[in-house]
Length: 77
Image (cartoon, rainbow, N blue to C red; front, side, top):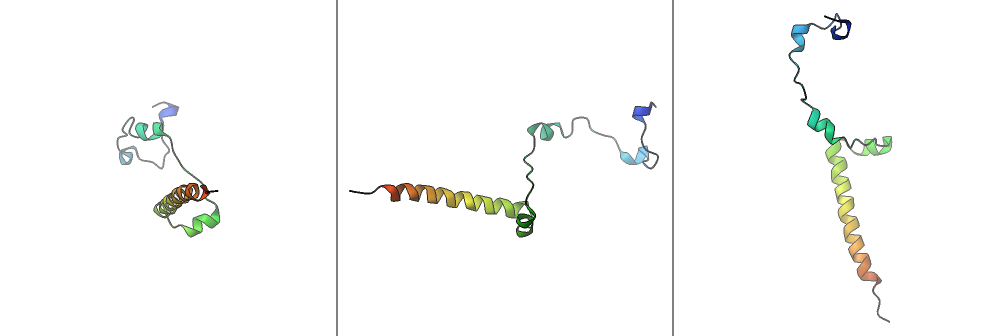
C-alpha cells in the first residue's frame, strides 16, 4: 500500500466498508443552494421547512400585493 493509499491507524479497513464510486456525483454536480442565516433569523425558524414555509408565504403575499397594486393604480380622470 502506498503512502497516499494508507489510512489512519485509528480506522480499521474492514469497518469502513466498500465505497461506491460516483455515489454522490449527481447530487454534487447539481450544486447547492446553501444559505447562511443571520443569527436572529435562525432563532426564529427551527428548521429548513419553517424557513421555506415562511418564504413561500412571503412570495404568495408579494404576488397578491403586486396584482392588487396594479389594479389600484388605474384611476379614472
